[in-house]
Length: 145
Image (cartoon, rainbow, N blue to C red):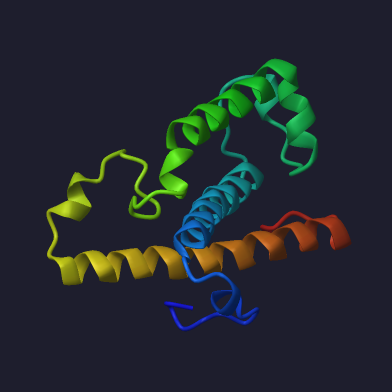
């Protein structure tokens, strides 16, 4: 609602949108990484090793194996665990404490613009990711080509 987009009117129900902003930024960042990863994977660029050569979006998960998936799950758990309390306190949404010196060197007006850009790009990435998954499921064709 503070960005002028609230089709479900959640701001009428939930007056403190800090948690919702955290969730939106987090999901936007995940989708930005996911859509770039899907395009790179289907372009044939991958890590060394036979387990990373599968270009199928859903088949790649099983190709990596249990240990690889466990490493990803543990990394996500560590990031989530170290930032869990920030979601419910007065922390700045999206500030997980990594490399934020660049943002804090900007003026408050520039910081607001950058934060709004991240929200907008995250929303676009969420739509792109959903479209890529639907295309893959419906047509069983790679995104590129």
